[in-house]
Image 1 (cartoon, rainbow, N blue to C red):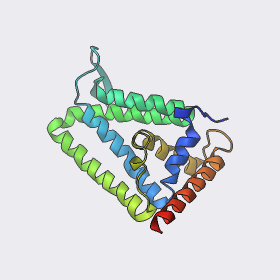
Image 2 (cartoon, helix red, strand yellow):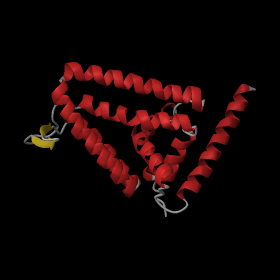
Image 3 (cartoon, one colour):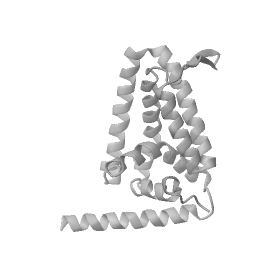
Amino acid sequence: MGNNTGLFDLEKHFSFYGAYHSNPINIAIHMLFVWPIFFTAILLLDFTPPLFNLTQINFSLFGIQVPLVFNFGFLLALIYVVVYVCLDFKAGTLAAFLCGVCWIVSNFLATRLGFSLAWKVVLAVQVCCWIGQFIGHGVFEKRAPALLDNLVQAFVMAPFFVLFEALQTLFGYEPYPGFHASVQAKIETEIDEWKEKKQKLLH
């Protein structure tokens, strides 16, 4: 059975997301651009002061010592990790692992680039990725992004759902039997309702 407990109702969240991402090209664009947005957001937050008075931890990445700082970059990654694991343990654990990798690699880049260069890299990536996503919605999906209707869900859920979409498409992954069919039915219903409202506004 699915988890139908409000905040962590996977069917509800995925059907909401899916109703805004039904076009294959738009889906592909989001798969390409969503995680870089998340990664560069953490990279920028890696320049905030430590949240805890802890001894610095060094992590070895390809033989290079990376100082891990428990600041707002860590806090953001931790929030995403908790939400994703609560949504679905299997896919959420993979998403949590990727969040952890993003945090570690962002720490590495932060120490190598320095703030004066890092913020320029972050700005360039963010602008490029957001433009790509708006093109995906405007040109291919022909529907405004989900963030205009639910800002928190669009930002928090997007990295998990593009990963979930990939697992579902490539490996036929379902958190439980019947999940995909149930979600698809809800997506089609939501899209039909949206089209009906759009038609009423045009007449």
